[in-house]
Length: 510
Image 1 (cartoon, rainbow, N blue to C red):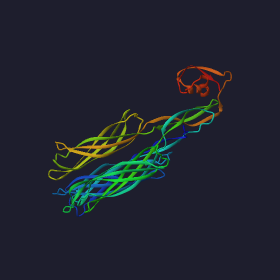
Image 2 (cartoon, rainbow, N blue to C red):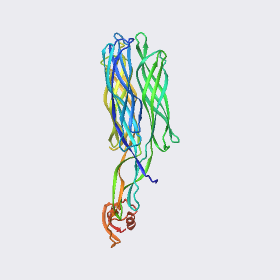
Image 3 (cartoon, rainbow, N blue to C red):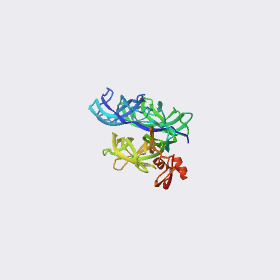
Image 4 (spheres, rainbow, N blue to C red):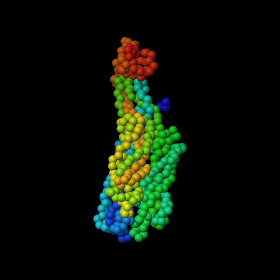
């Protein structure tokens, strides 16, 4: 076995959130009709860029897309107010004693949104968004050098080595042809990333995937400057990245990720083309199992010995759990008879995953569902609902100390119209997680041999005799009677030093 002089522990550097208020006082331009009814108002927070400075500060640039849909009087056409709210945040993630570069995960969500028409020409929007920030670092713990001549008890541990990680933020642009005569605006959009290939070559990881962009857009009506109909669009945009990861080999267990930080769709008037700009974060983490011998106890047969120890929680090699989940939700349309449903969508907010038993994980969160459509009179409607969800996921060999590093995203939302007029939505969630079991180990940190305090020794006897039950082993007896484990095993012809001992044991003097 290769001698390991250090072990690595993944420690949480920061776990919190940053909040941002959003305010908009908007006056309609002259070409827009007066507001008669507000259909919906949505705040969609995204990340423009982020970076971590050398002193552990997270610099975050964000944008909030504000979209208000409304109806004019005596009209069924939908009109849209599209605005952007930009902001910057700095979060101190520094932690004393940890200098390793952290692996940062960011998750944006809308906390609340209120919208009212102050007058037929003026809209007031108030809300808040937040960013959940988690940062972890692979901390190196050096195993101490034990002075020569001491008796050392070691424990062989199989654990994860250093977590290797690299990520790259990149902008991907694509022109999407819809075939529509004219697009008024985008009512709704979402993205679903998917990894198609990962290859490790010479300290590099080559990651390939696609991002499926789904959108609902309105058909432009020149008479009202609104939209008189809606269409759906879906496009697969290829993504690829080469990541430099020093030390990675094809023997490492890899965990690739593709995250869409921002998606901006801009329709080109009268062309039927939508310009798509994606800010994509490509990341690959890699881990390799290794075996180390860790000193857990030490003593000298000649002098009094003092030592200090640290409690280490070493993680085992990760294992992957993946499952598709299905959640059903009912949406009320206020007893309106539905003629058509334009689009439905879902979002899982505040997801939490934890061990539930030795064979199960439990995923909880708030599922936010919404639907656009029109009633039998052709009048558009919008309905939404948020409710708590809980899903049980099978997973073997789980304890309360199991570390769950998970990701969950909505991949599809379907619907059906029930006889009572309600909409039944079926949301498909793609859940993936890497699970680490932890092994608590008390490892020696420092050793002091007190040469000013020699042990008392007697030369009257070459051997002593002790009687023991099956609760003692070679180490505990040798330490108690100040002899060596090797001498004790040779004198009593013991082959396994960890085997429990019972009966008469000969104690050699050293």
